[in-house]
Amino acid sequence: DGEKSVLAQVSVVNESGNVVYTSYASTSKKVTDYRTRVSGILPRHMEDAPPFATVRAEVKRLIEGRVVVGHALENDFDALQLKHPPEL
Image (cartoon, rainbow, N blue to C red; front, side):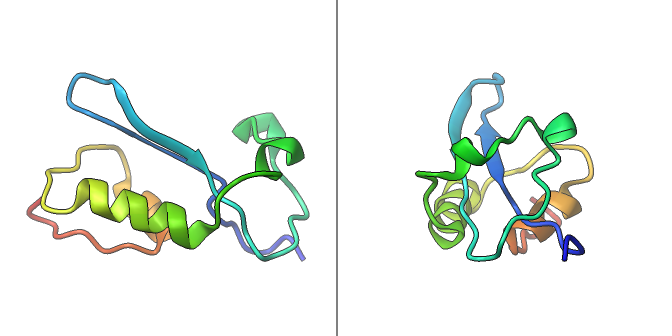
């Protein structure tokens, strides 16, 4: 129905700005709008994407116990269905 947004891609960079992880994430839901104009995501990007649960677990492992810096991170953590200690 196009009412709910889900994670399509995630990237994690280190303190030097180098990408340490990037992945598309597949969803079990039917995608009705890729929002390609703003996201750059196309249906072909999702064809071999790992499941959301796998991507979420990998990101969780990467950021565990680390300071995370970014703009409006609550939105990113919501999309990843993760909680991160505010002091980090």
